[in-house]
Amino acid sequence: MKTLADKQRGMGFTGFILIAAGVIFVAILGMKVVPPYIHSAQIAHVFKAIASDPAMQSATTKEIQESYSKRANIDFITDITAEDIVIDKEEGRLSLSANYSVRIPLVANITLLLEFNPSSS
Image 1 (cartoon, one colour):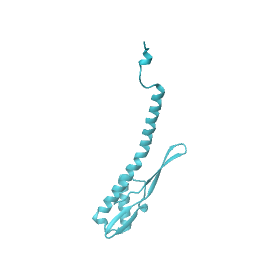
Image 2: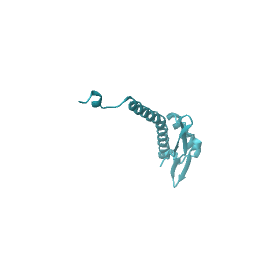
Image 3: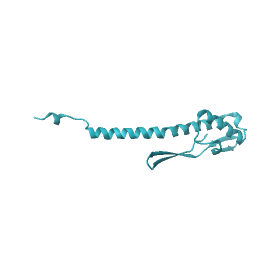
Image 4: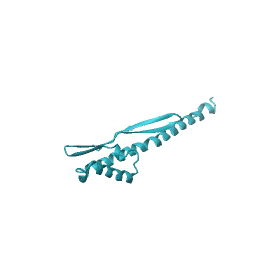
């Protein structure tokens, strides 16, 4: 006859701790990685809004940078400044882009480097 301990199935305490540590690590990593991606999407949205604005098609570089600064201030975008934007006017089309990176410290001397390239196209 089998004892009660032989019939029991499930997770032990050590397994529970390992799974909980893994879930906590993934949650913390997600909380650190998601905001830079959201900011990149906001920057791309601002670029598209400026590029599609008819008033900006004939604007000077300074006016385009001022428009970005105002919109970035509203959305609290601090990852890039107006001077970091590459502005191209080809065949009457306005195109905005930027290259930037974000460093996220994880643990001790381990850092995650994310590189972004938002553009209006």
